[in-house]
Length: 203
Image 1: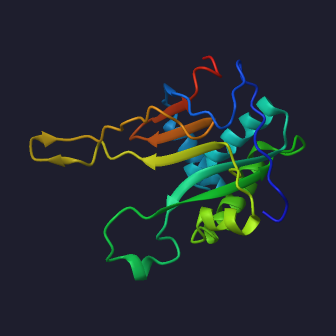
Image 2: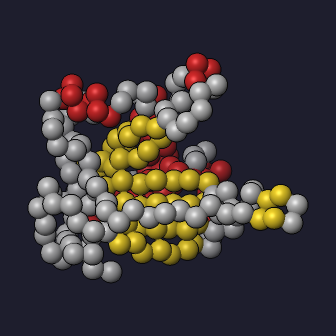
């Protein structure tokens, strides 16, 4: 982040003011090519999280006609201080920025590999709070307006004898970002949830 980041210039159907808080809606799809994606990630030596960040950044680049794409994501706040915080109970998380340069003259595999390197660099500084970065930069506006979250599903793990439980995600009625992509990895598929403003983007 040595140079200033630029927000994604999303082509919306109905523009809105950034300070407005609008009601959001969700759109879900399911990908059943889990095996193929998993094999590709193993071959490239990257995580599935990296794969989806790369795909998301690539799509945003084509939609916005921008090559410099910055997305936000939520990571565990225990990354650097695992030993010190291993006895602490509670959710410790932080927002980090992942910046990728999507160029045309590169193969898809090389592009995903470069995204993996950027992810590792971003995670190395994940102990620095997002609010601290805003204070140091003097920027009162968000450094990104699109976000991606990736999680492993626990649906197949919560079983006790004849009792089965599953985690039901409660979607918020308001979205603080223009666009949020949530990827939930299941046993044989990926559930993709897109959170957006229906007053600005029509699906």
